[in-house]
Image (cartoon, rainbow, N blue to C red; front, side):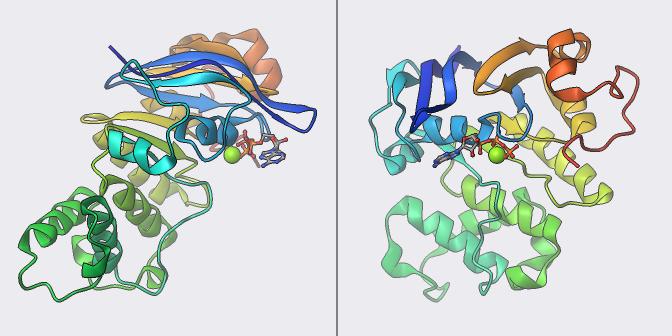
Amino acid sequence: MNILEAKNLGVYFGSFKAVDDVSVAFEKGRLTSIIGPNGAGKTTFFNLLTGFHPPTSGSVLFKGQDITQLPIHAKVELGLTRTFQVLNVFDQLTVKENLRIAVQRLRGHPWRLLAHEDGFSSVEEEVDRLLVAVHLQDFRHTRADEMSHGHRRHLEIGLSLGVDPEVLLLDEPMSGLGMYETGQMSDFIQELAQRLTVVLVEHHMSVVMKISQRILVLQNGRLIADGVPADIQQNAAVREAYLGKSYGAGDNSKETVNA
Ligand SMILES: Nc1ncnc2c1ncn2[C@@H]1O[C@H](COP(=O)(O)OP(=O)(O)OP(=O)(O)O)[C@@H](O)[C@H]1O
Ligand SMILES: [Mg+2]
């Protein structure tokens, strides 16, 4: 079943076409990655899917329903959410406080913000569940700005999980992470993909090739390839456009081609 679908999706910024007539359907439960050079339109494509930017043409379907015109929050309520390329957490708040905001947002009780835990056990239970899900139990009372970048990225994903999504779009969750943290994030994303439909934008080729079930390649706003990792690695147009001559099927030494 296709849970999310873009039909002839496109957007102009002035006379520049950042996303150009992209049609793609995402199957429920599948981990799909989107790769492509800087400026290819990956983030813009996420913006169009999630409603952060209105498309100039085309439509977005969620479970077969046309959601193109729905506001962001309505899409989130349906189960479509995303993270941002630039880290997006509340620095001054603890991990628990961050997660509590995410949970309360969904429940529509912002006035309960940071209220004492007593009496709101169901919210607290949900927060505890998220703490475990993002592997931050040991940091529950740590302020976000006192954590490593990797843990902050986990927290950010936790904020998205607070709205109980079915489809999670991750925009470069590994950017700025060291090798060890990248490995942890890769494991974490695979874990998420067991129960959610994940669409991953990422420049870490070795991770993308390892964990993706399907890879889409964008160049100049156009979808130039769509296939399983082995096919994408062998695709001449993709290698030319993005991977570079040094990247081959057996070469996983390059952590990122974005350097
Ligand atoms: N709001 C906007 N107004 C004008 N141009 C924009 C806007 N947003 C993006 N662009 C342009 O659209 C193109 C695609 O940008 P986008 O951020 O989607 O690329 P990307 O594939 O996510 O790149 P990166 O890998 O560097 O994150 C770029 O040329 C960018 O400058
Ligand atoms: Mg981007």
